[in-house]
Image (cartoon, rainbow, N blue to C red; front, side):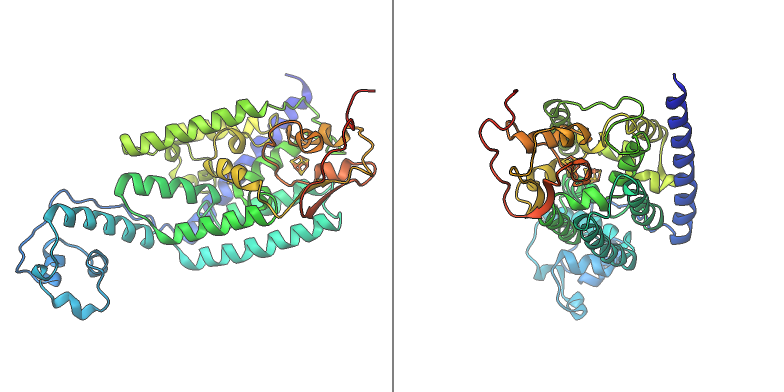
Length: 388
Ligand code: SF4
Ligand code: SF4
């Protein structure tokens, strides 16, 4: 192992240790609202019971009973079970579904969630303005990533996250047949951010995405145009193939075996170290080290939201565009791009992979032919990149 590799690993260990320690302190300050989901296998049932008595006999909070029977007012708890024609089996299913949603709701710190979304909007708007004014560049790019994961990860925690909205929605439905509406609202907001500015929530707001990007930039030269120690661009067909396979596996296992694979290795838990198990630490360690050499390995190989974001980013209103009349076909942008995406945007000759709107291509272009701007991409002029 050469000295540069050792230095990179040393910095990485210090960064990881600082994140774990500070996140541990932060989680202690916020406190944990984790509520175990209780699932019943049978119910105390007698159709002459009032709903209030039914709640008491089965130790159910009245809110849960109100949800099961869609009650509008608490006075309706005095109605009897006979007023609601429902089989006992269906009642058990609805009770477990309502219990799962109740536990989800109790486990959330709604004030923190509101503050986090507000800050996400403000921060992303600021980053967009700075990119447009060419103020985010090789010198300061990694510090913007650092601010992002400190704010949205260390200080505001692992939850919510773009990844969690999809993963938890699938597992909650697979395990308890429950749909938690606030999660779908969060997912809609994240997808709105994806289609507003190309994958912008992943690019600059996701706590684990920006941490990986920060680590990747630690191993870059001063121009942020290539790795100090060699960095690798994995063919998109390979990384996306693995990502699709992982998503299918995760979904099938959740529905068939009622088991959440991602929960055991969830790298976002680096911001909630109290709950990480041994497998989780090993996986997080591998992803963080790999981030020095491969761009955002978790996003490209595993993340369920990464996959959905990639599907939606083709509809993005604001995206990386090339002005071909200014482009001198020097390839500086595609060489400096951390992945294979700029090459596909430039030449339009194959599927466009995930673009994390980092702006590296903009900063290295010698003729300012690239921008993050609204509207459709220009078509590449015929023969523009033919070898001379
Ligand atoms: S793809 Fe990356 S940046 Fe986007 S949600 Fe997943 S981890 Fe975060
Ligand atoms: S195309 Fe440009 S903005 Fe997108 S990932 Fe590559 S360098 Fe970053």
